[in-house]
Picture 1: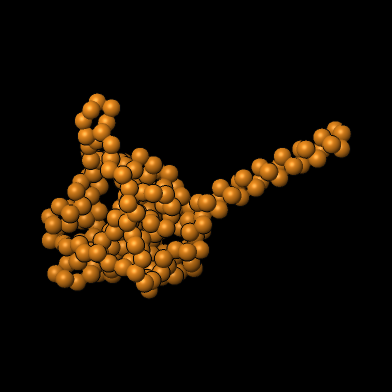
Picture 2: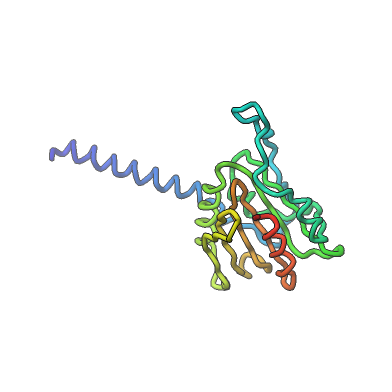
Length: 201
């Protein structure tokens, strides 16, 4: 191989490596900026266009239960809060991410954040990559699996506790075209997992 050909080959290799590093940086940029529980007010919802009609001329059907109805059926309430979800940090596109504080009898028992998009599988993979590289030595109780409940849709389930990231248990669920983030206050696991089941039917 001539010297000039070697140079061209080396430059091509370097260009490929730069592209890989850039792609990795895109998906893990938020790894260094995952939210702490103490963060101040930050907007959670990014405006987006309403879902378009489908090709048949009808309205695109909702691919998941109504979150407000699910909360009400369990005697829970939702209110706006200053907490910024990890979903909002990882999904860096013009996609709506809705976030609410979950209350039981006026007391906070957790948080729910969700988005709906045909790309939620990609978002879930980017989320996992960011989280797995951000876990602290305090991480425990990790569950990362694909679940196939009988007579229910397949769901990707990720749950853990990591006091270095949050004092609450974190749960992420991808089901159909939705991706959910739940934060669960200690002692509220039963009620919040009932909500998870209600929303992932």
